[in-house]
Image 1 (cartoon, rainbow, N blue to C red):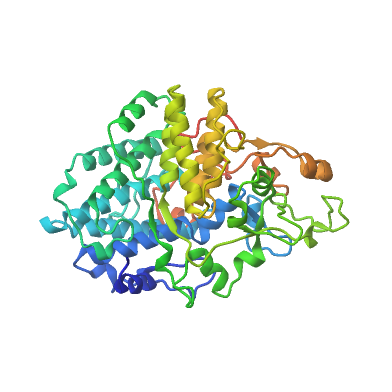
Image 2: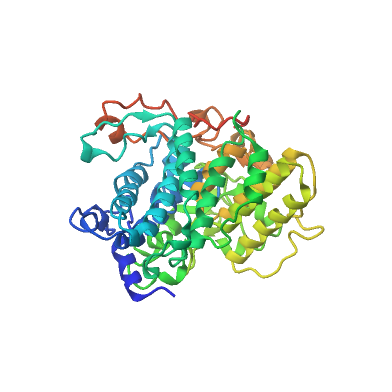
Length: 507
């Protein structure tokens, strides 16, 4: 159980960024945490900050829109630019990852030179590698080898190639995994994720390496046999790295889960700006997925989603006699005890399933696939279900490799909803599933409404011209990052620049 001090720490360290400047931002104060002389004080804030960035204003919403869990409602405009594929850099997330979170991990390592603090070094290095991977997976080439060295006089760090960053991250994680954690310890009260259990942190580190390896699946250097061996000889997380929902207090602003903060804190972003995307709602609804009622509130007429990026409010796509803007749509639902997840048990199981599917080991592929679906159901407080049983829509039916990869990716897409929107965005770019159907909704709205392929994504109705009928590949660079750095590259032309490992054909 988390102690009172951790709840107080969370209140002062959660960073709610975005358009509302009233959200607490203590981590920006140089007279608070950055001056501390003990790494344990930094740990809970860095964990909370990382979780908040992955499911906060920029990437929590951006990931949900670009992987089509949600779309902008017809009567609001807060996120219209995201849904129309306007160039965005997710500036706040980039700034917080570098100026705050990664700096906190660096500070923790500097302060962990004493023997009794080596456990903090292990955790800080693991989470630093994880965070760098997220950043380069999103933006591609970024400052890395010379980053975070303002104290050394480097104020314009060079941009490193993403493939080179990956190579160094692999070197770092291998060095970390060579450490014997049996003699390491930390104060359990300051660790949100695993309460100081270093065996769990070793599993987390193994899982970070597994993610680094699988992300390269479409590159020339990928070695699936090496992943099989790695899986067979190591232990991986079975308990999600998360801030448990019991840490939140829903009664006061600043103490809620980030998404509830954006709703309950006065901005009403969810209820006024977000509705379910037809792509996702139809997939869950058609397949009678029990997670639908956990993830969305149901209108009186039943669950309904809207075409992604569609703002023709006077259209009547369903020919029901009601304009689209006047329909009642499913709305995103977050409970007051929603966990804030950084890495999940289901994603690790799905990675294992993919590795064994690629190895044509269907016994283990099915085993880990079923475990991934089951873990997602447990997370959503759903009891035993038949969806993976014979005849269930998520039943493992061995098919071609691509059919198996699609099956795994679609269930990962569902499992990540409300928990790992950033991961969904990155993984969609790698696997190209859910696949994209290029139907032009405007050409025949009713036909598209009735016959759009279930399990496919659409291209934004109003944004398809900006990306030539493709989904976004990566955000542009934040303008401030380019303006302040004399070694910065030219700005990306649009959202279509792919990161180095994004090699698979598809939109």
